[in-house]
Image 1 (spheres, rainbow over the protein chains, first blue to last red):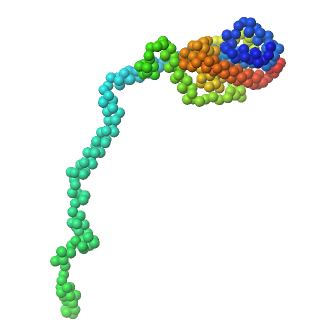
Image 2: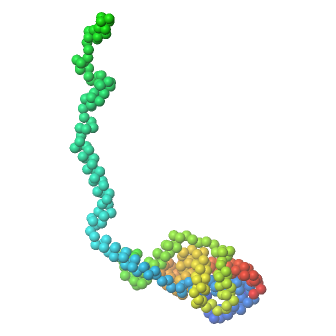
Length: 162
Length: 151
C-alpha cells in the first residue's frame, strides 16, 4: 500500500470514523513502513490529545454567576431609567461645569464693567504724573507751574542776598 | 450577557440552543483571533513529564484516556500547545469534529460555514496537527535516547 494512501485515510476524517478493516490495514502496513508508522502514531496521539482536552469540563469560577447576575440587574436598572436622566448621569458634570464657567464670565462682563477699562485718561494721569500721557493730558493744568518771572526771581534771589 | 443584550435579534427560526451555541462559538473565535498566538511547536522546551507522557502513549497500543490528575494536566498542556499552532478556524473545526465527535453538518450549523468549508478546515487542521506531532514525537524519541527506526 502506498504511503500517500495511508496518509489520505488518516486525514480524510477522524480516526474514530475508520472502519475496523481500515485500522487493521493501516496497522499491518505501518509494521513494515516506518514513515507510515510515524504518521499513524502522530495521528493517533494528536487525536487522543484533542479528545482528552475536549473531555475536560471547565467549571466556571464560583463568582461567575454572581457577577453575571449583578451585571444583568445593573443593565435592567439602567434600561428602566428615562433617557434624559441617563444622559444627565453621563454628561452632567460637563454640563454643570460649562454652565458655571458661563455664569462667571457673565458676572465679569456685566456686573463689574468699570474696574478694568474705564476712563483711561484719568487713570493714566493719576497713576504717574511724569508719564507721557500725564504731560500731554495735563497741559491745561499749567496753573500750578511757576511763571518765568517767578523762576528768575527764585534763581537770582540768592545772589541779591549775597 | 451578549445573548441577553442581543435577544431582540433572535428571530426564532432555529432553536434557542443553536442560537446560543453560535453566539458562544463566534465569541470564542473572536477571542482566539484577537490573541493571534500561533507559535511553531518547538520540541526544545518540552518538559520531562511531557516527554514521558508521549513515550507512554507511543508504547501503549490502546488510546485510552488518562484518569490521573497529573497526567491530565500534562495532556492538557500538550493539547493546548498543539492547538495553538492552528488558526482559530482550523482549531475550532478540529476540536468539534475530532474532539467532540460533532458531524460536519453540526459544525456547519454552529459556525454558519458551508459544509465543504468545514471539511476543508478540518482536513487542513488534521494534517497540520499530525505533522506537528510527528515532529514532536521524533524529537522526543531522540531526547529519550532511542532511535525511531529501531521500532
